Amino acid sequence: MSEARTSTRDVVFIALFAALTAALALFPPLQVPLLGVPVTAQSMGPMLAGAILGARRGALSMLLVVALVAIGLPILSGGRGGLGVFFGPTVGFLVGWLPAAYVTGLLHEKGWRSLSLVSSFAYCAIGGILVLYAVGIPLMILNTGLAPAKAFAATGVFVPGDLIKAAITAVVAVAVKRSYPLIDRPRARIG
Ligand SMILES: O=C(O)CCCC[C@@H]1SC[C@@H]2NC(=O)N[C@@H]21
Image (cartoon, rainbow, N blue to C red; front, side):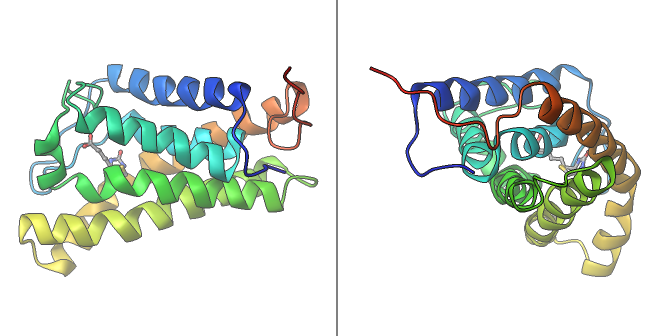
């Protein structure tokens, strides 16, 4: 399981999954007018980071993404970035990528030995959808002034795509566990 120390190898993987999340922005976003929050491939980033790197490194990779957005890098879908994003309707989803990756990773760590497609899918759905929406929807309501019932109903548009992302992540996570497991691999000694 993950230790508290961060090795050079960890830093490489953290940067790699941050870069992967940024690369997912290349898929064109689908705007949802009422909400101002797009359907985007990028919400697969926290699922992948948590499921493959585990809780701590997964969350750190999302922290790196959020920090890069904050300093102005246009790494969000549609080429967005900068502090303005933190005052818009998507802020809760963006910062929610941290706890989403953390919880997805924690569940994968706890269920690591018996990990299957079904359990990995369930862990991704809990961390990458339930936890993410729990942070994202209230902040979206605050920033848009939408009536909560309307906002909850409208976010249903994200669910099919996010379930597909959870399924893809589960396939990848199980394949990576078989070929190059990162969650319980013993730490390489440096120096
Ligand atoms: O680009 C941003 O500022 C963040 C976008 C967040 C989009 C959220 S993540 C969960 C849900 N699923 C989607 O496809 N879109 C929303």
